[in-house]
Amino acid sequence: MTNPESSRPDDHLPDHPLPADAVVPDSPAGLFGADGELAPVDVPEPSAIGPAPTGGQRILGIETSCDETAAAVVIDAHHVLSSVVSSQVDLHARFGGVVPEIASRAHVELLTPVIAQALIEAGLDDGHVDAVAATYGPGLIGALLVGVSAAKALALVWDVPFVAVNHLEAHLYAAFLEEPEIELPLIVLLVSGGHTMIVLMEGHGRYRLLGSTIDDAAGEAFDKVARYLGLGYPGGPAIDQVAMDGDPTAIAFPRAIMADGFDFSFSGLKTSVVNHVRKNPEVATADVAASFQEAVVDALITKARRAAQQYGAKGLCLAGGVAANSQLRERALDVCMADGLHPFLPSRSMCTDNAAMVAAAGWWRLNRDGPSPLDTGAVPGLKLPVL
Ligand code: ADP
Ligand code: MG
Image (cartoon, rainbow, N blue to C red):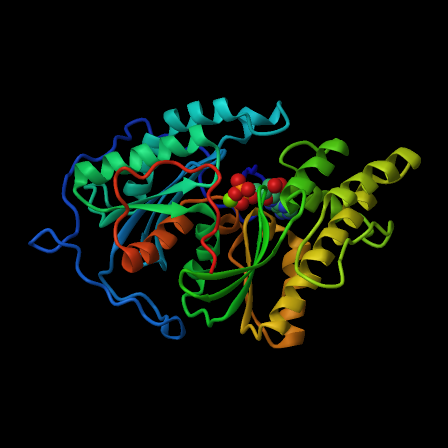
């Protein structure tokens, strides 16, 4: 579970959301009916998802599971009014990875101004939101607690529901922010710093886990290989960049594509990279980066494609930080074109950790399951709720 945003080309989100005069608005009002009850909402059938109705529910999303402090306001899971991400990458870079204690302290400092900025950018500086959603797992316990505590406090003060959101489910919902008319079933390739999964999404909240990594996550492999190659932290964007000048066919790294099933393994590939560089110290780093990236993308796309064919999926969706990878996006588009699948590729800033996806997943959870109890705690090892 790593990641930073600042080097991404299409990242338009501010890095330093600290307006000097920023304060958290103190209006206690929510957008409930006169009787204080949340207006009932018809959750459409998966096949009937459409554009959000006007005047919908405004959800404040909060994300603090790892090293991004983020807040966003989204209407009805589709319309992003604001999305503020403050990356802690500079704080962790010299350690080569996220330091949990530093992350927690930074969240404490940054969260209030980040929330204030999200509300102000959304034009809601009077604090009128319908619910507050926060990631409650999986992630770093100290980091999660900051967001969960803040969300509960705001929900209490504003007298609106609190919604506890699963970070993995939030990644799935990033695609819905930009493409509300998603047709199901869908194969989702969820690839981040901490997870690598192929998920069959049959309906909202209805997921089947078809496969996952048996060792390293894809993003973790990018980060470790980048570190070994001296490309710095975060590794994914660095390899993506360097690989553009390399030959992806220069080195035939192993694919670990087992004949059956949808599980992945990336630790052998990582070892192969290390062995190859040791034996060939003069090798061009760009060729190693490009060939490594090709091997990861090949394994991911081969299995996602097979899953889509086997389960009759209508589309293929990428989610998680590694979904920002240029080569993965290109290959996913090629496969979708060849197989008649609808491609769902969230913009890069929505692939990596952000709070708009938390608000979107929160909207669906609120309207399916209702508010979460205020005694909900942070759950560092939370799993995707699968069928
Ligand atoms: P988390 O795992 O904490 O949920 P993210 O979903 O934000 O975090 O994913 C972060 C991971 O995504 C990191 O491992 C990072 O190296 C990787 N990543 C980010 N951008 C790219 C990219 N362009 N190519 C490959 N990997 C990337
Ligand atoms: Mg993530």
